[in-house]
Image 1 (tube, rainbow, N blue to C red):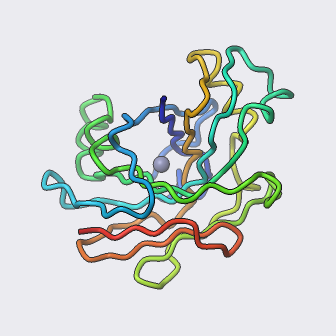
Image 2 (image 1 turned 90 degrees about the horizontal axis):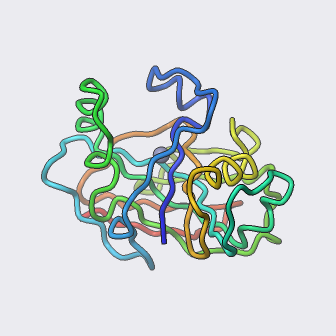
Amino acid sequence: MKVFCIGRNYVNHAKELNNPVPNKPLVFMKPTSALVRKGKDVYYPEFTKEMHYEAEIVLRICKNGRHIEEKFAHKYFDAITIGIDFTARDVQRECKAKGHPWEIAKGFDDSAPIGQFIELSEVDLNAIQFHLTQNGKTVQDGNTKDLIFPFANLISYLSKYFRIQTGDLIFTGTPAGVGATQIGDHLEGFIEGKKLLNCNVK
Ligand code: ZN
């Protein structure tokens, strides 16, 4: 399985990091060793002093495909959840400055906790409200109506380059409000007010 991630998919987040708004989806991947399920603890890595949370809607792929047309893309995922794309921002800044790939800043162990999946029938895909709390306080609040590249667009685009396979996941990008996390933090992710993700940083 593969874990696709999309960068800068909300205008207000691209702006907060002074990045240009892309005209095509910005794609990167995380290895499966980055995934953390069922609320297991996350360990703060020793190589960063600036680990940021990025709360994102995650799609679960349910069908294999290539060169998928946008109008058929909805048939290729069957569940969603909220996940965190943990990012070593200081390391990423260094990679970006050198023009290097991002993997060490984005794909490290435990950098992708995901919540419990819910059926698509529970949400309106074009306007999913989601939020993240840090020690009980809301730090990110997003809605998929603000996506630059909606889900169908992402699946179609990815499938031009990669075979889409059952079990693959797509982190669809983060809204504004990213920030630093510390050891001892308790992060919780919600979709439409329903708690799906629980993450303790140790
Ligand atoms: Zn992200």
